[in-house]
Image 1 (cartoon, rainbow, N blue to C red):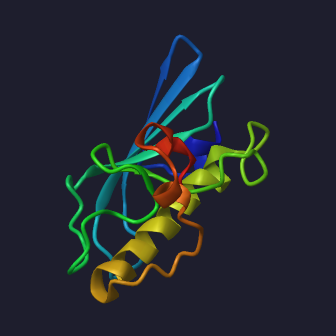
Image 2: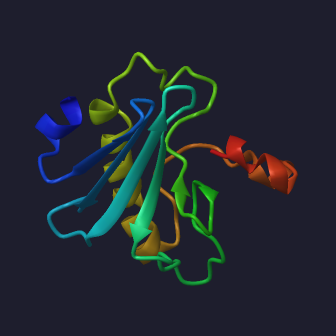
Length: 137
């Protein structure tokens, strides 16, 4: 399993050979904070990554919500467009969504200090009803 070889400190759990749950504590940079993350992946769905600790994540001064999150309360990160062009099931989790979580946290820490999101992406959630927030980016 690539996750175990690349991220040796992470913990892997499988459920009925159909769901993978991986947790680890990571830092986005040598001077960055520590964050416990959880990856949940079912064969029939795209992977989801959550920040488990700290919870809630602090917000930048003057901001009312986290940038690029599908779910503010659960702290589910928006790491790729859901259209299947950036991530699909043929790709390794260890070389895609987990490094993308490190990158998200790197930009999050910049956002904490500056209030500006430097990680790119788009924000269509302003145009969507609340129930469709899984399509945010």
